[in-house]
Amino acid sequence: MKRLAGKVAIVTGGASGMGRATVMRFLADGAKVVVADLNEKNGAETEAVAKAQGHGESIAFVRCDVAREADVAATVAEAEKRFGRLDIAYLNAGVGGAFGPIAEIGVEDWDYTFAVLTRSVFLGMKHASQAMKKHGGGGVILVTASIAGMVGGGGSHAYSAAKAACISLIENVAVELGSDRIRVVGIAPGVISTPLVHRGRPEKYEKQFSQQPWPDRGEPDHIADVAAFLVSDDARFITGETVKVDGGLLAQGVALWGTGRDNTFMKSAGVNRGSTGEAMVVRNLQPGDQKK
Image (tube, rainbow, N blue to C red; front, top):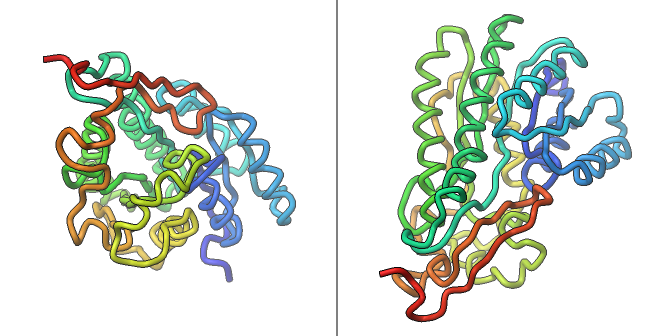
């Protein structure tokens, strides 16, 4: 018997990268999946891939801005309407967000980063937990965190702080929902070869991919494998935990993007909107441009 047979899952940010790989893994393990993503083109491609693999009746796509409560509530409602219940919510949607020296980061870009990375997790936990309680039998809320939220040097200021907040939410909400048999767990990826990281140019980031002790490049399927385990009954006694999936990168200490003023994030400023389909904004900083 497939280990997710009879389960209904939502995967936010499920139309590309780690999200799409996990959608395919959940489907292969017997789950029915609602893919929630802002990028409709990627959503259609994901549905097409699933149908080609024989999962056409087990997948649905919903356009969702995970920072808007109405969209998140509607996604949960669609899972209940289409498949009858909700057992798994994988809150995976993300963007690179604001980057640059602290004095160069715009307030709007900072707020956008926290809206997509942290408010979305709060909203997902809020609405998914209500559905799981209503249908009984417990459930699992899984969150994509990051090693950037565990240590300095793993990402930009805003991204790292937002992911650290997610890790705290995982721990605190797990304590609240344990008595309802709802587990709350996280995955903290290291450098994974996704469009969010390489933006179509993986060769540009070979230095980051090669810094980990494990010799293989991090791929979306590595995350999907761990996600499938964490949401299954094989992990039924794990809650309030964020699992590092980083090829040993954090174990050796990280300075992925350089140190001090040589840090990649210090050489330009702007906001990375990931695979949402919305344009990235970059302002290159010349020596002397940084605000004193």
